[in-house]
Length: 198
Image (tube, rainbow, N blue to C red; front, side, top):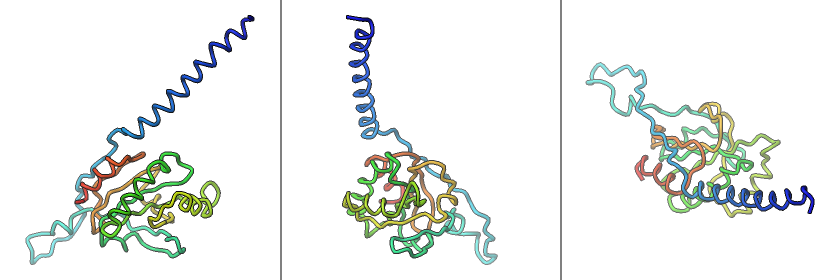
C-alpha cells in the first residue's frame, strides 16, 4: 500500500470524527447556551422637577428606549412608541443568520402563550439582496410561524446593533430592562420575561 493511501485511510476517519464532534458541540451549545443576559442599570434622564412637588416621579426619571420607525407586514410605517402600552420583547434578526433561525421557534411558542399580554416584535433586517421580502414570507409560511412580522427602517441604527440576533426586554412605557446578545434558548427567554414582570 503506498504512502498516500495510508495517509488517506488515517485522515478520513479523523475528519469524520471532527465533523461529528463539531455538530454535537453546536447542538449542545444551543441547548445549554451560556447566560448572555445583561441587565440595564437605571440611568436618570434630565427632568426638571415640578416646583410644586417634591421632585420628579420615578416614571419621569426612568430611561426610555429611542423611538424609531418600522414597517409592519402590510407596509405601514409604525413607531415603536405605539407599542409602549405593553411590555415588549424586541428582537433583531434575519433568515440568513443560523442562530436567528434556531431561536425563532422559542419566540413563536412565547407568542402563542403570551401574545395577548406582551408585544413579541421580531424586526427583520430586510435589505432586498441577502434578505428579501419573498424569502422572509416563505420562511414564515414553511415553518408555520404566526407572530407579527416587522421590518427595520431605523431601529437597528437607533440601538447601535452591530450583530444579530440581539434581543431587548422592555417594560410597558418603553423602559429597557435587559438585553441578550446572541442566540436565546427557552430558559434565557423566560429569564428575560421574568425581568419585565412575567
